[in-house]
Length: 115
Image (cartoon, rainbow, N blue to C red; front, side, top):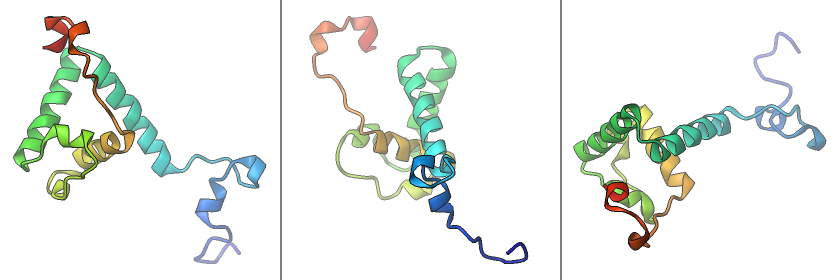
């Protein structure tokens, strides 16, 4: 068992909750998605210089491959996303998976908030 090159239990089964006979380990794929979700939510909520730099960098990366940020709000996925570095690919995929939407009630926002 210890000299084997194959795990006795599939990794996917280990990540099941304990009440479903798993070990309760969080799957790394879901963990990275959750961390990215939290970071992206802070970027959209905060107005600090760091978050502005992050947003501008993301928009520049998308612009270099002729992608549009607003495409994330539609059902279609940008097929040339593999041309940017993996970090920004993960950010793009996370925003796409989060299924973001935008508010169309523009009258309730001041000019400063819109800008």
